[in-house]
Length: 458
Ligand SMILES: Cc1cc2nc3c(=O)[nH]c(=O)nc-3n(C[C@H](O)[C@H](O)[C@H](O)COP(=O)(O)OP(=O)(O)OC[C@H]3O[C@@H](n4cnc5c(N)ncnc54)[C@H](O)[C@@H]3O)c2cc1C
Image (cartoon, rainbow, N blue to C red; front, side, top):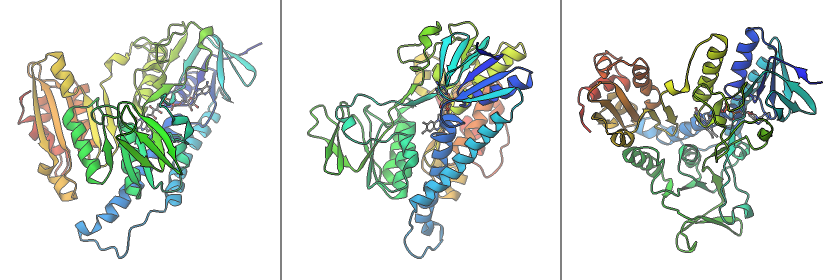
């Protein structure tokens, strides 16, 4: 006989725990299942530990630049990698423990620690126990993609997960993948003191962004001594003594990078291959992402998929928003939809990139009549005062409706200032509202109204 619940949640990522709490508060009997560490990717191997490490790397960077600010440090700046890792472990460990305590203390909620597999659309097994519920929520997240690069398995490559155990300084870290995760690790390890080369298959870094953003990011990294190799169309990996050689050309011989360690950061795959979905009628796409409608319902009645595994977002805030959508629709009778969400994310190199809405390339492709304003950070007072003037801010608006279409702020405070724009977009207010707002001086955000006053046809 299966243990009967009102709801089963698989995974304790960024939507599962909040959903468990909300369902439990509504009087539902909930089972939540976690096979590894509570809190999932963001807490254990993603946002929280990486941003904690970015903070250590920033401290090292600033210490090396101390003289620029008139601060005297007598002696060389050193980085104690064991201490850096211990700090990261403390911060991430506290977050994970908090999620575990929260779930285990929740009324009407039973926590199962083990791997969940479906038996049917309304039942799962975990550790040999059978559980059933009319509603099942999948929040299983994803893991690092390991592409079929010839020779890769002959070396001990690292991923974002195994990087969490690194408590030493690699002599030369080769980062395969010039997108968000790879760039954060690349700059961080350069600042810790390693030689770093980022190897990217495409013609430029973070190819999803506009060219000026890619170029600005590459300049930031290169200015700190990070090697950037783009156009590495067919990579190979070979061992040479204690070293690893990554071949970049199709013949593998002419262009190559030799380093001590390789970090793979070429994308993610959803954890949907070991859920026995074939017993459920839940369909996935060719890459394994669970197909959902705009309310995050799967193709099996009574089963929802939330977070990275549904392919509708790849961020902590999108996973959490998935929870809000599902909970409000289920418990409050609302009709919230994922289609209402505006694309927004950060790239947490230093200075960071804050992004909202469409890129300039997407706007051009849409055929809209648009206006764009751009200002280098050298003309932003706060950036000058802080001694960090790399990057720029750019905002695009619809020439007819006056709605903001998209923005990129690559520069100090860009990850925060972008929210002025994002919130205006959510409010569906015309850009003139933001143009006339009186922002606090001295901030990066205070220049957004100025940029909006200098718009030019795109
Ligand atoms: C290096 C890195 C840095 C990142 N930085 C950021 C950032 O700065 N900002 C941001 O917004 N996002 C960031 N992300 C992305 C972010 O971590 C994820 O989008 C976020 O964690 C949402 O994940 P999720 O809720 O889908 O599930 P996850 O957090 O991946 O959790 C899924 C959970 O399900 C469990 N599970 C899986 N299968 C089973 C099963 N069969 N049975 C039981 N349990 C199972 C897993 O063990 C895991 O704990 C980063 C990701 C990485 C890798």
